[in-house]
Length: 183
View 1: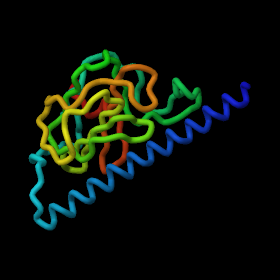
View 2: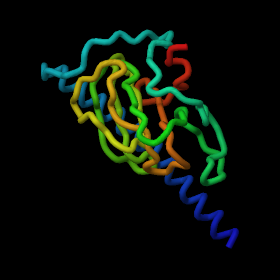
View 3: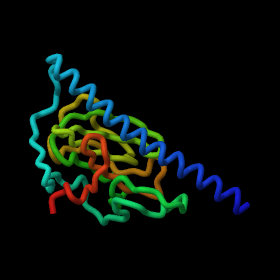
C-alpha cells in the first residue's frame, strides 16, 4: 500500500512538472502570437506599460500571508521535492483578486494542475499568472487596469485549500515574484 501511494505521488509530481512546462510554453506562445499581431499592425487592448528590470512595481493581487515561497520545496500533497514557480498567498475562498499591473489578458481558462488560470501580459516580456481561481471575471484579449478585479480566490486544480498561486514570468521564465511586488 505504501509503495502504491508513493508511486501515485511520484506520478502526480511528474504531471505537475509537466503542467509547469505547459504554462511556460503557453505564456511564450501567447506572447509570440501577440508580437506577431502587433508587427502586422493588428490593434491590441494592451495599454503601454514600462516595466523596469529593477522590479518592485507590481501591486499585490490580494492581501494575506505567504504560505509557500518561490523555489525548491517539498510539495504539500505529493511529498516530493519540486520547484515552486511562484508564491502562494492564503486568503478565504471568493476573495477578489486584483491585476498586479495594467495589461492585456493573454489567457483565461483551465490548465492542468493550476485549475482556473488568468495570464496577463504587462509589456516588455513581463507577465503575471493567477492560479487556482474559483471564478474569472475577465476574458482573453481584455485590457485590465492595475488593481482591477479579475477573479476570485479558490482551490481549483491541485490545491491544498483556498489560496492564490501567483507567478511572475519574464520571457516565459518563472521569476521570484517577491522581487517584482511593491514592498
